[in-house]
Image (spheres, one colour):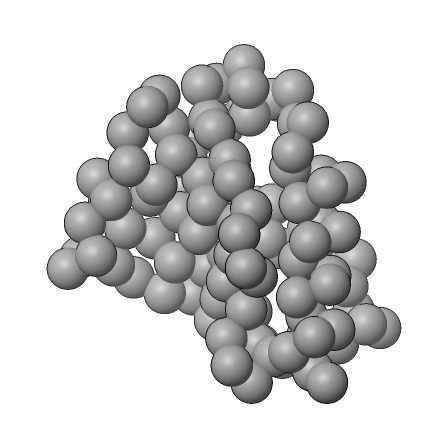
Length: 104
């Protein structure tokens, strides 16, 4: 049940905040959503950042410089809680734009 709730939140986040974000497009960031995961790639390079839902309904941000899984780092965002989804949304945005160097 937690996995499903987290996946639905991530899908809504993608549709509402990521899919048509002008700032991402202006900075050459492409995005995609697939099976409880949002991937971010800069200027045609392999995806370097992904937000994923883990098996237990937790959210994580994965950073893979140059798309290399061998150097991947992970920031755990914790278990999805509908009561704190606004703060979670802000934290995900901060992490992604901070890593990719996107500024409004």
